[in-house]
Length: 182
Image (cartoon, rainbow, N blue to C red):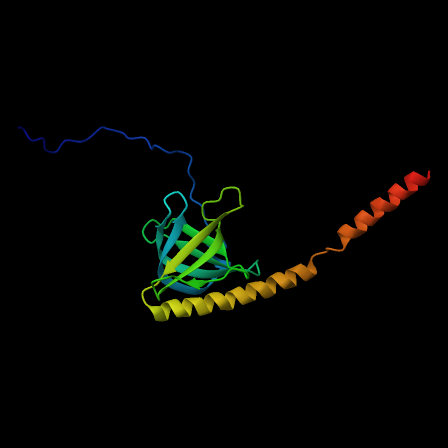
């Protein structure tokens, strides 16, 4: 075999994907405040396989956006940085100890990580930590922010104008009575 040395390549390669622009999300990231962060493993329950599936390994974060009153849990895959969990900490959800492990917690949540329509999917999840002390600290933080989300929901419920709807219904009834009389 002959070896070629000092040859210049004239091959040109066009990009497969075109039209991509770099997006500056630094302003959006400045508005997000991380209040808790811990390395963990996330599992979802697969209804088709009737088994727990590893969803991702990375840092579980409890975050608050400065424009919102609510706290959420977020987990990005460690190597790929793909969003694996995005769920609001709902005040009614209960976190239970996972059977057979003192370092894992099971809970249900509405996950928006793969939602394109903004509705989310209800998932059964287990989050596992390095040891039981870290798991207990996570549960304490979760319950703390769960309580704060409950208070924020009550405050938001009081500020919403719910009394306008009955007034509209009463106005429609009065109009109907006037039409009946005429």
